[in-house]
Length: 418
Image 1 (cartoon, one colour):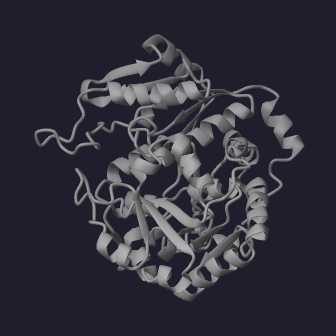
Image 2 (tube, rainbow, N blue to C red; image 1 turned 180 degrees about the horizontal axis):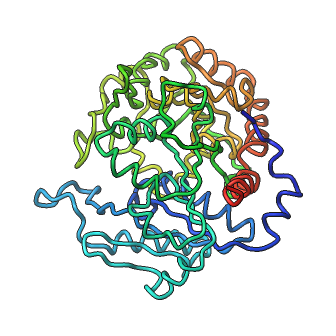
């Protein structure tokens, strides 16, 4: 499995930009309007294709109903029946990056479209060269089959494959996958794990693209190791007697870490940390345990609710310390977080739980992987002792492995050849 630091060669760049492609990118920017990191999950892809000279459009057609995630349920109803907050948020984000007139949003409760007119949207779909379905956010990909190439990017490896094989929604997940032509996964080591079903598909590997110019900066680093996360996203999956859990399971293994690395400070920005339930699934965050163990806990919806504050929060951090979802770890997926890649691009080292990524990324400087408590402690102390060296290495790894020019050129080259 290649580390592909050279895939963004000048020859490759010229080949893919010789003629502009019409590219559609799907996402969740509007629906998850209080999650600044979610915006960047898709912005890095959209802006990355723009950098390469392509004609790029963003279409949000997820089928997910927006909900009142600010004040809780209104009269017991989680659905936000007013599309304006979502539409206004999406319009602001698109406008900030010069994408006015280049986006469309489908509001499921009333089947209304916003942004591009129906005539404009249909014309763009009919003439598009490739659709990039990031994280499988498109509800009905078969409605887009007039497009020459439909590309699926799996950002949730292990859970995607097991869910489609034996999950509660496996039938619809398989139907959605079947509508695509080419498949990519962030699980760069999945092929080496026979326990994870491949769904009889060829999974091309990729790293997440980061538009480096949007993350570089000369602001001084802060004094804390931080991360931004959900405590749990959905239920643990069980497959062939193996359990594939969420971050909550992994985090508790390192709950005493702040006491061991003091005076180093560890902070975690959690989404809705004091919320005990959601309309779907949630495990209560053990705030008392976290805080008495020395963790500083902040509300992510307050400190980084949009793309600007999310980026600022990372720049104001000293480095990242984080666990991964248990499923990524148990499944030996090789997954590496797009969030962690943003820390690297900002020149902030990361000390993160190893999912197998050390096989496809250089680890030891800039990126320090850990599996045990002792390794996590040692990683933090190493960054503290040699911070400038690790910060410089972080920038170098971002440039060599996550530069959107390199990652997306390679992705398009594979997609258009298959």
